[in-house]
Length: 111
Image 1 (tube, rainbow, N blue to C red):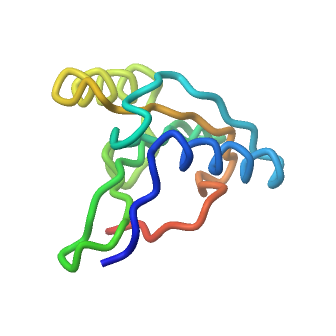
Image 2 (image 1 turned 180 degrees about the vertical axis):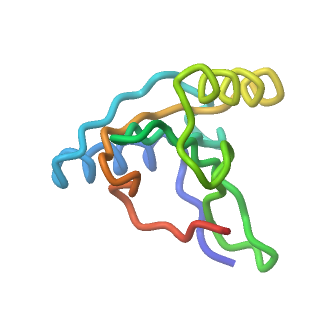
């Protein structure tokens, strides 16, 4: 089992990595600073993808494409985020400019 970093610290790290990589990011919604889940919106050339923080079968941190494999329009991304926030009000929502829809941080994306 890997150590879990507090959500607020992880978000700060991800934003810094985005700045370093030339992929600016913003916090759209602050969640619980210690243990809130994280949604990551990637704004690309062809639309948006929302990644949802999950754990794989072995308990390792990973990401899931919450909005599906293909990019979606702003309305679909907003609807997904709104549903998730209603389900878990402690969620963080961050967004990055990512023309190729690749996040600025390392993370395994589940198919």
